[in-house]
Length: 373
Image (tube, rainbow, N blue to C red; front, side, top):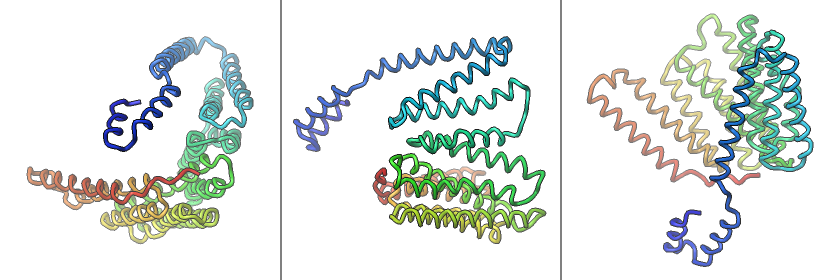
């Protein structure tokens, strides 16, 4: 406990001396030997690195079946421990679940290395999702498990699209798989209020609409640098954007149906805004000012919905992205702004002014943090 801050609080009248004494007593009883744990952690890390170095140095000398057997034994051991601690909600189980998933993913790569086989990256990722995603969805506790299953899903669909798009050429090969992670938002919204693991489903929902907003932002940026309605792939681009827009609207409706509170409505409107950007980007593309305005309208809407939903972090992020896009747009409109000393002064003053306004807005109007489910 910081004794200087505690004394300052007492002197300022924020707390009385009795409260300060109770805080000191509580902290003394619940203090953790961080220095000792740091030393133990460094020692454990050194041992782990040493083992990895020994194995790596003798990797080729170890028979493939021995390596695979040891890897599988680790995988099986982690599964047994995970089963033994079932029902104990906490970071220990969450970390163990993540380690289990990492062991499973690396085991697939290990098999390919041992037998000198190759395959597109999306195939082992899809296999991992088939075997481990149900485990993550049934046992995940918080953001670590949500990020694990959501990250693998996003990586799988994008590597599948990249691998098959060049050969097939159909918009369905690209648009439908890459729109699939949007379904994480309604899935999380539906289960976060019905499950004892509300924190996990909340993070999965946030990952889903975050993915939608990131995709809409990239579409707005792309619309500002090229005309999507022209070229040999114009029809394919139009159908892909229509598919993304439909997926965004469908996800928004499902979230709206699942959660009728202010937070759920805010998430639904954000997904609808992402779908609207994908819908209008195709006819409005080809002008960098229009692309910038599309981007800023999207994030201005996100900021407004974050205010309604009480999402402090999202509101501050939206304000920061709007300020950054204004700065970038000013340089895009004045290509020679940095070619002279006066231009450097003007650009510096502009950056400071925009940053100051953004900080003031973010501090003054940011809502209190949303309460965890």
